[in-house]
Length: 316
Image (cartoon, rainbow, N blue to C red; front, side):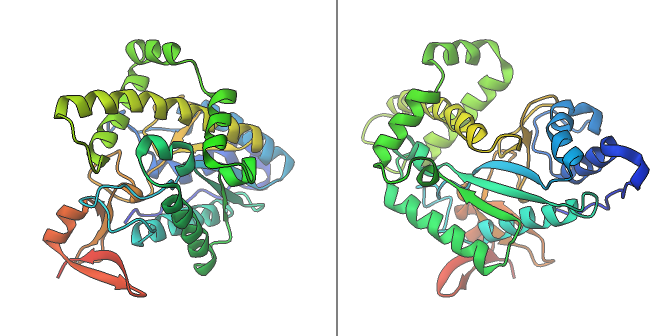
């Protein structure tokens, strides 16, 4: 499990800058990055300091938006099924607890809007829309059951109502997605964009449940779909910003210092790209919990059920 730092408590006269630094101090221990072990300070995150400033000055709750919690991977070697399990439960508790700790330094508090993006990509990640509906409904039920009052959800149903999912995806892509050739050029010239493209390609390759062609053909297919995922991801980010102006943008992908997005780890994991929806939880004998592939976790522990459904694995 991730440990919680003790936050500085700014006094009345210290100003909004000190409060913003205290909020960042709550986030920094959970930063998801590829930068290496160098210690980061609030001064490394000017975009976030600017994003926090209006809410602090107005005495309003801080709003974080987090695209993620889309659906479970379709690869049964990674996950326990298509519904949320202990991984999502712990991740949601972490986010709610993070907001509660921020309230200690900013009394108006904070909330996280989980912007579930499964329907944005379902045709590209090859997960049926009904599975994504079931995942999203179960996620909202889990938030209510756990009493996680600092969390709320947002998805394509909130954005476009009763249109078909194909129509919603087409509208998001047409209105907000970047040009494909521009994205290809950025992937060739920008290290961060290239790493994101490579990470998404790897996930698509690992998650493809059935493919009748050769391995090289699958790799070509995944590379093409990765560009589509990146286009839709940027489009979804633009739509989120339009619906939630002034929010501080979190990301489940690694982010460098100075990025407009702050990469955040939801749970301990051996892979910086791993998330609860691409893995399952292994509980160690000392109580520690970490994410890993199902195929690895079931070799180390025994399956634990919660309300009759697979939840996680526990080491003896």
